[in-house]
Figure 1 (tube, rainbow, N blue to C red):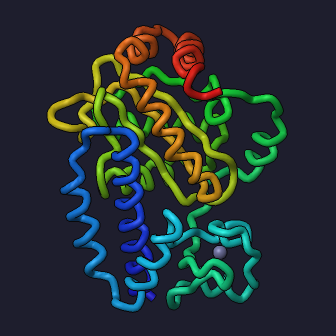
Figure 2 (tube, rainbow, N blue to C red; figure 1 turned 60 degrees about the vertical axis):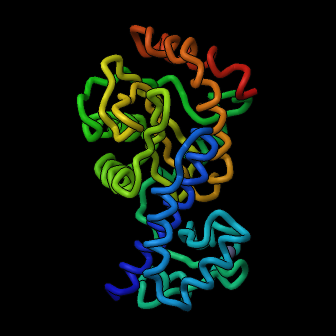
Figure 3 (spheres, rainbow, N blue to C red; figure 1 turned 120 degrees about the horizontal axis):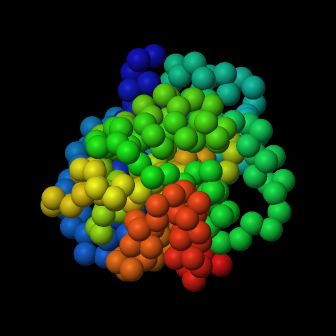
Amino acid sequence: MTTTHSLINQMIQLQELIVASMQKKVSMPTAKLDELQKSISALGADLPQQVKSHFNRLLQKHPEAIVPVANGLCSGCGMALTKSLVNSVHKADGMYKCPNCARFLYYPEQLVERERTSRVYGEVRKVGISRYTSPELMMHLKGGTGEEVLRELCGRMADEAFVDDANLLLDLSLQREAIVSTAVDNGLAFPHVRGVEGGGLSMAVGVSKKGVRFGGPGRTLSRIFFFMVIPTATSAFYLKLISGLSRTFRDSDARDMLLNTSNEEDLWKALIKATRKTFK
Ligand SMILES: [Zn+2]
């Protein structure tokens, strides 16, 4: 049983590294990907042979080869799974695959408020960046360390009922940072938690005028944090969103628009204005 759990964790880690290298390609045009590539090879070499070859075959077709079960469905292809398969995946007494798309399945931690789904899709005519975020998720961060900043962002997500459990969200986002930092050039960072169950993609935006050491390239401090909770069903948007945001905020004027605000209401207005051309 423990073996299956650690195998699942290893596969999720590997997948995160692969997605991180895709993310670095879209957000850092000059990124050196050697280190990341090395970690991917090292972690991949360690998988049992049978799992490894199936995993690699899947990755040729989809960016995700291991996906969570969500409300009894395979969150990769949307196929309804039998109760007994869902139970087996939950028990984790072996590796199980979706009978339709053949992706590996795992049972996610319950994180996202279910009612959020109806709330998001019940609201009509959201345009631009407000499809992914909202005024109550704008923050002027006070923390001086990466963990403090993440704690603030997770706390806000939970206070505003975008997720159930701030501590679980914090744990998952710290685990993700431990795999490879989400900090990129220009003082931007894209911390996130992927593969959660239900809801839509939600993003909190935090700015830190003094900057935080967040594992960015060289000695760069991170000042603008785009913190995302990404259900698997929405993971196709996620790279597009990151790519659009890093393109927009490569421009220092756009960054200053956010950093020079003095309250959260103005931060919201500045975000809308800065991203107007990127997200229509
Ligand atoms: Zn499937």
